[in-house]
Image (cartoon, rainbow, N blue to C red; front, side, top):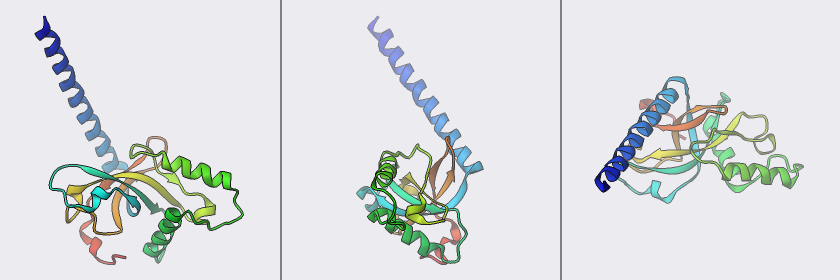
Length: 176
């Protein structure tokens, strides 16, 4: 009798693993098919991303990306990221309650949550977003984070999110 119970538990775990793997693959396929590619500046990243890992795995990073097509996009991304990281406001007339609500919202995000549009008081009229991303060690050129940005495919909206992708072949040109 005990063997039947243990066998049932093992079968249940195997089924759960297969279903979750299939679901994750479908989700990744959806991002590859429907998601837009963006250079994502890193606002903060786990310490584990700065160490070489030769195994599968990921570390979390908060990233910032822009929808605006700007001439000096790298410089603007860097400025917005520093502003977010340091909590600097572009508009000082905003009340502290709104500032606190925004930071509470983004600080509770996980990589499964959709990106959040950054408010005007922080970025002006730019279409800037922030979100959490799992950065996969094996998708990084040196198996660790060496640049101030990564690339991701993003979907906006309730079922959106942002997924890490390898650096494009031509990304070495114009690095900023």
